[in-house]
Image (cartoon, rainbow, N blue to C red; front, side, top):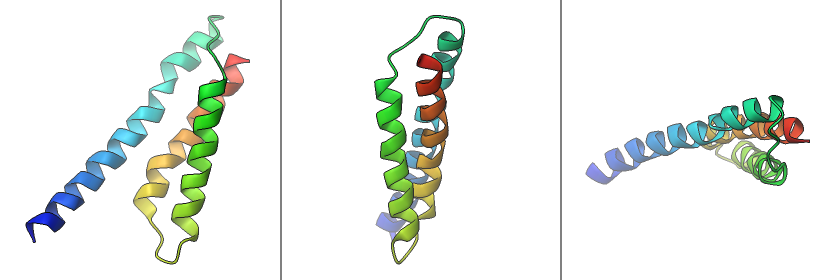
Length: 86
């Protein structure tokens, strides 16, 4: 029973940290827009990685909504960071 509780809390913390990781692109996006362009490769790769995880989480027999929710912001913010870095 204790292990189940631990896994539940761990999954929520991991989901929140994943979302925060992708939201952290906002400063890079703002720098890109102000003319201090960053490298577009990493956010583009991160976006494709997130697409794969979201598709995986939604097409498997037992959908994994926390995995999809944790990676969806990475698609949006990764593509925005990529686009603004060009």
